[in-house]
Length: 277
Ligand SMILES: NC(=O)CCC(=O)C(=O)O
Image 1 (tube, rainbow, N blue to C red):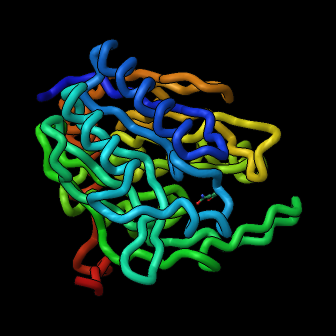
Image 2: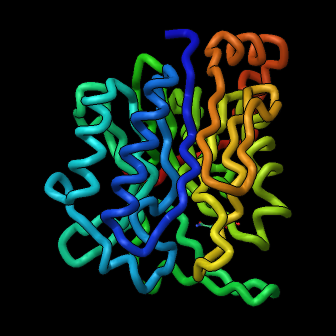
């Protein structure tokens, strides 16, 4: 499929998990009715973005209610679904994980956030994801008829090595469930998505929660789709909404043939090496 519609669901996240599942399900249905083939939810879509709460909301695959809902929604609506992320329990460990489903409800793959957001910003914002969750160690690229999908989570986008590894593994559309905040969002959100798209000549899609000024962590919003030339094709404002964009896979080839950055890399001089399996 060379052209298709993507829908990015910028949903408000509530304390109650059940409310989040109902809202996500409604938005997926609405996106499908508008003709979206790929639907994307934000980071930690089923729980507030508060590290100490992650274990309480954590679920295991396949029985977790959020995971059941995602699989069923993908099947009932006939869409590819990047289910944002949620706290995933695996034995004693919890991860910040994105699960990706096919239109028949099958799990296509998952990405565990690789770079944990542990920061103390001068604005007063302190986050320590590593206090409750573990880091993933896999580069995630999912073959699909929509063009191979690279998936990473929020802070992961700041690491150009990971983005480039995904693209070298074939990713043409990179999907990033995310939740930048009111300090880093205005400064870096749009820039970093545009820059990664320009570097890699691929589509970059960022899905944020809607901004809730009363939340313990205030998300920036501004979910967006950036094309391989670095143009912002579509961008949300701060409130709850679904933004749509057309993905045109031919534009990737066109951009790469006009400006062959990937071919012009001096791999005789430097290398990017994947050390983990
Ligand atoms: N949830 C996150 O990883 C936040 C990352 C972030 O805000 C950033 O600036 O990077």
